[in-house]
Length: 307
Image (cartoon, rainbow, N blue to C red; front, side):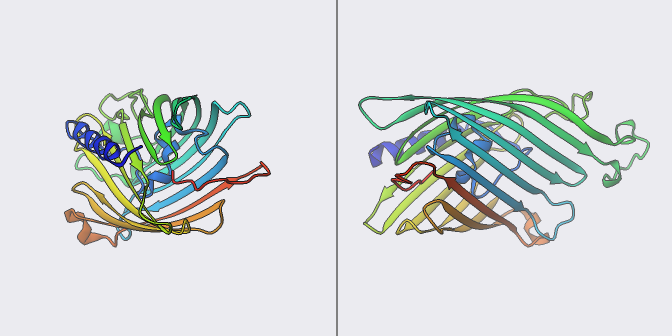
């Protein structure tokens, strides 16, 4: 895709995202570009091989009850490569609340004869196990009936859908990974899992034989909360070292470095620091990422993978 088309697409996504609003009910990651199966089931199988990626995030280190999130995703195309399958597991802790999510993902990809672009449609389905301990809650009304009982393994089934278009040097996607809005305790309508809408876009720009740039953007939108917009720029040196910066709108600045230790194995570290008042009471947020591509074909990995 031509550079001017890529820039226009980025601008459109930002402008469309600016009309909505978003909340952080689901965990977010600075290295979101290596974790797209979590938000978009159409990503399943898009790497052309079996991929396993894990990310762990410690947010607001030093702050009591801080968010701590881990995700593990596995996905691969089938022998009939238009079909991709994936599995996602997420554990998220914040204060007295613990969520464990298990989702299965499936995608179908349409190929085009005249260019290298692929258009994938995906669906996901699974459950969210929710635990909330009342001992971790402080209230001015200790006899509040809503706080008298612990919530243990409340099961919320859900499903989602997404669309993902990509070429070797460009991608764009839209998705809603959890469409149903259900309560955390199974009865109360004031503590719902809000429906999130995601938009992602990115590409690779070649500067020289050794250097490339990869701008990406992620928009998260949900009703009744501020817009979340992540903008990231990574520099890639010799297909081996990735380093860059991230800005989360009115929330944080971040930086990351990733090492392609082999054509199959990638390691990443990230850190970000908030721009809000809570930054005075914590030591920032940190992430570690591991990703491995399993190659079963004799020809191995024929070209670098940027997303």
